[in-house]
Image (tube, rainbow, N blue to C red; front, side, top):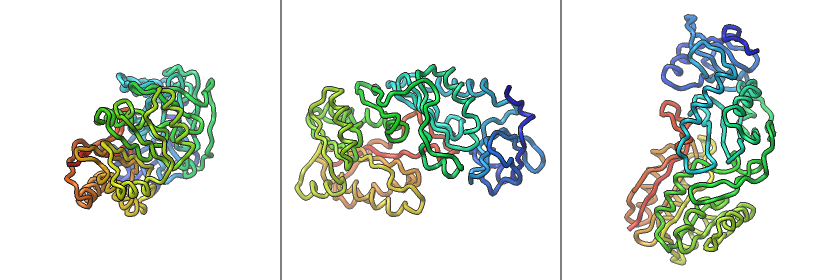
Length: 391
């Protein structure tokens, strides 16, 4: 039987900590916690005037000591989790794909919980010690709400180290295959839930991949830089005469070839190499494309890495502008949270100036809507990008 809210241990926070919740951010840091439980789990939170603030997940070893779950004084039981999960599911109606994010952590008022659906299977991540204590309840609620054939926990992420948690991959319900065929619009691809990046695939760029296909001229020459498993290349190949899918990983490119075969596509060249070097070489050779996609891995994984990351982004976008045919399109993105949107756009402006081309901004890009970005929680928004054309 679940404890009532009154049975939970107590935490007390400073006025500064309490104000974060009032302003809409669910985290209270260690420095603003005056008193909290010594063990991870749920707790009731009060300010110094003994005013009830909410129920939170407590992680005693983390800098993020408290994560707000509920502002009402009520039990956080299986019914509560079912209610919150059902709300998240309802907000995902109309997605033209069989792989999508069901829960985007703080973006869905379920801090430190990631839940992705791949057709009939679910892959989840528990990213805090407080949430880990609720694992059985959450898994049971996922089974009831989503009815999956299997649930895999991809808890092999470095952030768990800061919570004092082990990093491992665990099957906790049913069975999950090594490869899952999923559909994204008219494209099919194989997700790898056990070993793939993130939870098995990059789901946050779904809308931008479809935009790339719409922006590709029929019969044109296309480049998918940093292609990984060829997700952009597959969409581009529906309209392009020829697509080059470029990546430094031979294993990733082989997965891309499998995905091309799955779609019956023969107009994609999978090329192994360093994107920086090849872009510079193609510029010297005056090789040109009608559309270029640049979706690199995160260049800045820490705040201190931002200056170097911006230099890297400037370099690839400068070369991207220069290898486009007149009237060509560049779709560029950054998944580095620490690189702010304003800084990314300033970098694009500098790269455009240095390229000697007249560049038009057509559209600013962000992550897919199943990864909701809450303005008062900047950590929920990390993907930024732009669709541009050159004269």
